[in-house]
Length: 550
Image (cartoon, rainbow, N blue to C red; front, side):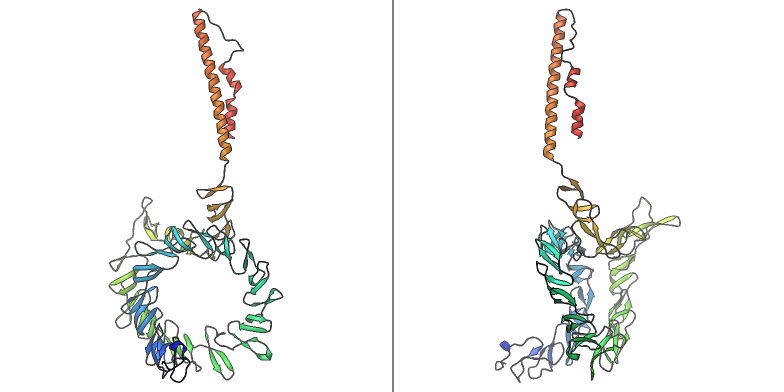
């Protein structure tokens, strides 16, 4: 190949440097990674995810990364592990695992526990070491002391101090805050002038004008570049307009249709039942999942089979079944949801516990007000006796069949005491002083408590407004400690003076009494002499106490 002038004598993958010319040419076999220089139509190696069958490259199973044939996988995709040349699912939220119960790496927004299972990070966190210490936050959040705090409104990136550095689309950064662009504008300048419009609009005289109902991207009312789905650009009448029933790679047909090259141009035709790819004669070449190709038509797999390569060859069974030696779906043991064979289960149905590869039915537990049912169960009175019953789906603890107290991972508790799937707040744009509240209809922004800027609920604040401090999740007004200390000092001085005067009076009184005793007579103190009662007129103790209260 040294005599040929292909770039650096090496062609990219799926191409080859031919013996007939100096340019790299594409291999003649679809999904072929390497082909023969003298015969580009003969494939040597297929792309990853495909295997060589005769002179074609066939796709491996959906969960297989590398395979030698349709039923022998050598490397699985993430979230799956290899078992007897088959790819089985890892545990929930696990990215890499060696078997169903041993996870080595969790998916984003989850962390690995000591028992090698995955638990959710705190809301807004993309990577964490445990549930309370985040390392990397999602877009729209900033990292503060291991916690993810939501950026200001319309802000996609902000500093750890909450100062915005990048705004969401259709917003512009002005003085460290995000301001909205004009209507239908995607990007605008700091003076509010639109630079790029959103899809379906074009810039005209500084404003975004509609392309029309049929056009998705355009330069003007008469120059459409990309049509809406199931339509295509036509040059009829010298204008780039959109027409129905004309399809190509850019403008594909509907999901239930396929594009056919006819004498009148590319047209969309309805696919045969359960078919994904068909030819001009409506003969199917690829079926939907759970169906298998037979003589150009799609036939349903066995009802127990999820994926099959023929009506008698199942590759992956539904829960409660496993693939037997003859590639049929056989029953797992009672109570088992996923198993390798009838004696080796690794996941049980609700109401069963896994013990040494076997699912044991949970015994009925008698309960009373003094007894507590296990997590996932509640105490129910039935015909004079009380038994532990299963909580609703996705509920960790509950008080009845319709009222949850806490939820499983990835679910949140609504006001209706139901557990719904957690919705990431990264794309929400609640204003300062508001929080995103999960609800059954998806959720909405609600107001925090008074004097609170950042909160997680109406009664739990994280950051208070100026002149207020956080105290057990509430915002309390700051008190002037200097003024309060001065008042206490004044009161102490007054009390010292009163004590001195009282002591002096008692000393004089005692001295006079001794003098009278020596002269064998008693003198009564005159009205103008100092007495304890007179001292009360000097300092009114009641007024002092009142000043302390104020």
